[in-house]
Length: 254
Image 1 (cartoon, rainbow, N blue to C red):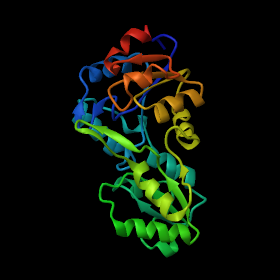
Image 2 (cartoon, rainbow, N blue to C red):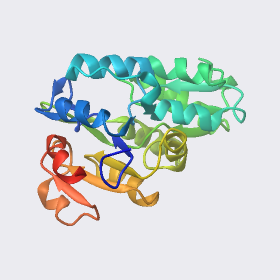
Image 3 (cartoon, rainbow, N blue to C red):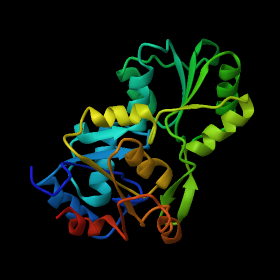
Image 4 (cartoon, one colour):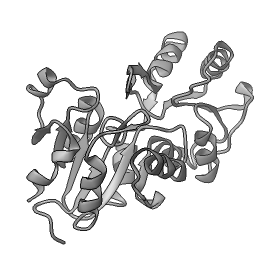
């Protein structure tokens, strides 16, 4: 396969392809070009929707047509890691998360008394009652599991609270540290490795998830400045390349 030293390119989404609902200029055209020369995957800590939902988000926000089979979400990575070890999970998250959990063989319950795991992702409808149920379940012996620990995610208006902010509330309330499944942790890396071909490079905007995922697994690391990482932080980062935007990716792929 052509395209320089890498065969698989893994793109993060929020902060790389788009910011909130707004596409980042020039990136979609570059992704379309590299899809013709590389094996392209998409990796997101967004657990609120299914892979098909993510593909639809990509289409609406960037115009790209993406096969859901090329997408890895933190929700799917979490469900696969828990399958066979959890009898029932209480889910605090977006509407896609319980769907993915059930699909991967993890039954979901609304009764905290029956849960042996509390699975937490970004929940835009979070409220006190949900936090109470999650806290009761964990204090009753359930595992506290986070789809990801990202404290924020980028929007056109600024940084919004992410799943990690909700997880932090439950960690504080239960005096329990969550098991984290999303980027850069092993369950997510394992899901990516199942799909990757040859040498892998990760294109992302977060040091603590995207770039950490790349470094822990010996993959290439390309940091873009269209998301949460500032130029000052990027200058001190252990990455292979820093780009203003993924629209510049062509120049480093050869």
